[in-house]
Amino acid sequence: MNAVMKASRLGRYAAGLLALASSAASANATDPVHWQLNMTPGVTQTSLNAYHAHMMMLWICVVIGVLVFGAMAYAMFKFRHSKGAVPDTSLTHSTVLEAIWTVIPIVILIGSAIPATRMVIEQYDADHDSKVAEMTVKITGYQWMWRYEYVGENVNYISRLDRESDRIRQAGTTPDLKSNPHYLRDVDHPLVLPIDTRIRFVITGDDVIHSWWVPALGWKQDAIPGVVNEDWTQVKEPGTYRGVCAELCGKDHGFMPIVVKFVPKAEYKTWLAAQKIENPGTEPAVEVAPAVVTPPVPAEPAPAAAVPTGAAG
Figure 1 (spheres, one colour):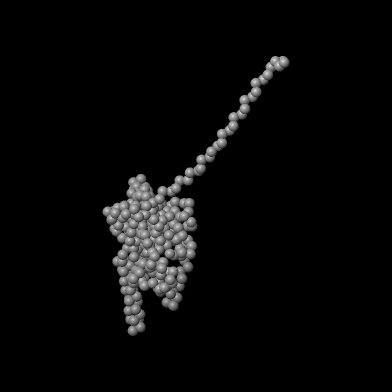
Figure 2: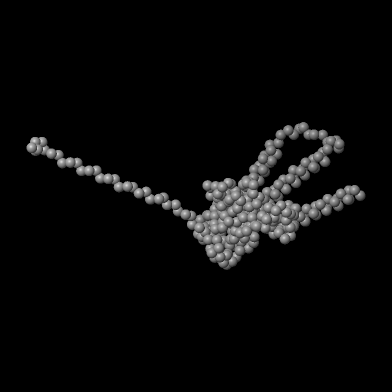
């Protein structure tokens, strides 16, 4: 009876794990779910590459684990001392076995390294000749906000924690997650981008090191003062994706979220036209050194004419 109850309990646990896994897989590709067991595929080719590489290595490890632990369990049960098993001392070395367990891991490593290397190269290929970016966005990290500048469009603005989340945080009250489901994860001005567009990002910092990270895009880049890092993305479907600063940058590090909103191209053009009126970029002031006036050098007096000797008198 106890064995039946234990088996039933294990069956329920297994069913629960499968349900959690299926719920994670069926959920939105970017929204985490409660007790999620797996990473999300994301919405870009970069994030899909990472997801596929993860799943490939996961199943390789599962197969290796089943074989190794299965062989261990079988050996411990089948050849246990209580059944009179005696260790075999005649076999002390096998060149064939050593070759097998050396060659197989090498093949697995090479087989996984080739696609992984290709994916990494594609991820860091921000502006390849055959895939020229259609637009460039400059991102600058500050304590504790982000500046987005649309290069060539004369538009830039600051994006920071939304005022309602900041008010609740400053008041120290408990937020109502039903009325404010994105508490501490929303901003006053999201980064708006068009779909079906290859977008190049150049990322830097103004004060300390920050890190711009949106998991759904499949990458993050450090925002380092004096250094310009770059990356790219291309999203096919409209949607809103959230991220955070991933580098400890000061006391309000946890309060500088990132929100990226991808919209259809027509909607983006309308939004961009409105931003050119509301948030125009300012051209950097050019400092002109004051003119240096050099006073004129007085002319030297002409030398007096020499008087011939003996001419006087």
